[in-house]
Length: 418
Ligand code: GLU
Image (cartoon, rainbow, N blue to C red; front, side, top):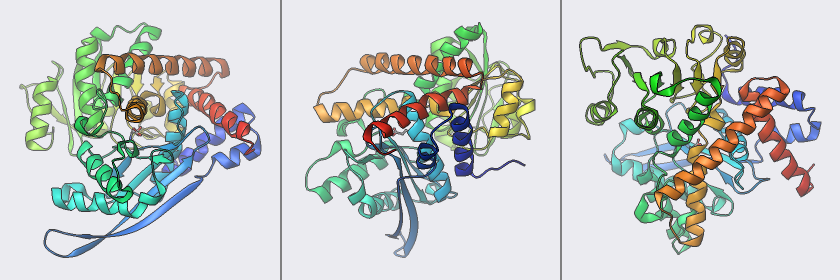
């Protein structure tokens, strides 16, 4: 099986882009590593009175284009290398949508599903006490990601404001609306992805109102993708899944019903709308005969072991890092149109940037204004990537790398770093 360490994958992707672009070796070497990273150890009082020790990371990958920006994950399998990879991909993500930010990421090794609300609050505040001196609205701005929520952002913003002694909404994005969140941030990752799916559909001549869709992952991105692809295009979502498995119904799955089920039962896997509705594994879901496949879960889902079986015409990567480099080659060879992760899921950070702008001006926009600006950013990025891929005769992920690396390299050169 091919390499599955996400950071090694991120470095290998960069190396391929560097070769195609004939990148200056010093520029390449500087981009291969995070500029800074923090490893923190945090004691947290649990509800039963015991103290548990947690480990966390924050990686500030590159800030040539602006403050480092990127989410914070709470996950039992988190490692420094997953966070490094995600921080590198954030650097390419902010560059591809051309917003004045760099890339960063954070992670805490924990299982939020086994923690109470009060334990999560104490852990969130402990994390900010540990890294608070190294983040800030002009240096490094976290946001939600896997298993972190607007409520967690609120606790973190509050803890940071206590440390600073005044209210600092701009230190973190993805906040609840009453605390300076942006309208439209909740579904921004999925919505941004859907704008790119719309453009891909036009380009490939696929009628999205006739299309069938499978979605892997039913967190923030997956759930909103279900809703939006049905609402915006009238496509039929025939399969969805979460970490416990999936469901498949050729008649289509109603997003309101599945979302309500997930909320109540904690999983989609027990949902059954009719006799035709059957359970599928996450692996089977990826290989279903659908027009659009939306990986919206975790890394390394499509690789040399299954890429040849993917039947979808469009793979819209709302997850970070779902496809390995070997998987990419196979999909490309088979004519599958991949909308690569750091393009497809850039809507989240784009609206995070809008949130920062609104916090700085203390002036808030209507949701329509957010959608219009998001659409403009995503559509421009989609076409820039498509054109680069055509020009260099490479797959779309390489096209995206070429666009982003050139932008970050130019900023580093102008600063006189290289
Ligand atoms: N966690 C999201 C991502 O991976 C959003 C990051 C942000 O808003 O800063 O893109």
